[in-house]
Length: 365
Image 1 (spheres, rainbow, N blue to C red):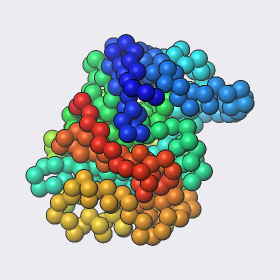
Image 2: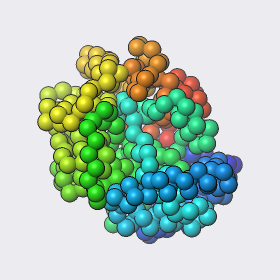
Image 3: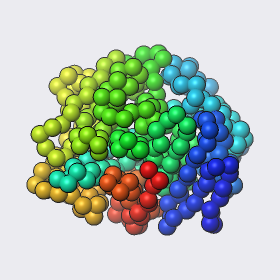
Image 4: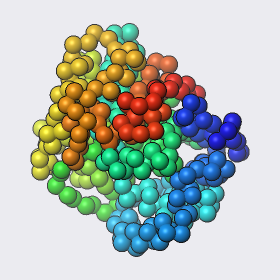
């Protein structure tokens, strides 16, 4: 993509290998229409992939196999309309876009937040998947930051992927930041009409003004999938761990220290009952984060980036990684909430935290 592409009140531009999508439309359908149009005009590889005849056959087979499951996941009408906007703009089947959004909700492996004595809040996150999937994603999608403005909703920004209407990690204009993680190796429980985890997180960014709002939203929208969400509130100068399960949730606010860490297991006694087991890698990574952060009186953006690069336990992984950075890390970024800036790696091979540069992106929030 060369220069800036515009459509309606929205635009897409590339900054040092990072795609920045600014969406400012009057409703969710037009948000999807604008995003889909801009991706199409920029010749996005992901669009070409999803329109490939062979891939379309695969998607049709997968949709046929999983459509019953997809119908049990609650997706608010406004988000369905956004998906329809994407479909109308790109010519890709609505069912296929729905499948891409719900069949595998990508969430990361290692996250932390640090509150400096002057109130400056720093949030760091690595998103990890298998090495093969990480390479696939990096081949077809550059790092993407989406900045969304819809009347009647909080403005918010999130680190995203093309066609991903939900949210995994981001922050809103009220200073609420979120970082999401899988809850690995838990007992399976399916409850029909529960909300998609990624869309639950989007609800938080669109509606929450404080941590109490986050708790209320979670209580009214139980998640279809188990998930762990780090929640940090700049204005309240505090953070919490939101642990959700299809029939339960727990919100633990941390008040006795200046940092918080999350990996892929429930930390509260209440929620640990849902684990079959806790993976060694998840325990190793959280121990590493705690060791690094516990001795610090303050944390700069540069130091936060160094935390994300930590691979003292090696780069290997089985189901999950043993180090904060591992061979499956395809997103690595830091939120500087005081300045509403995102520092994100533009690396094109995993682990991206060790390849490429961390590019500063200023948001309009």
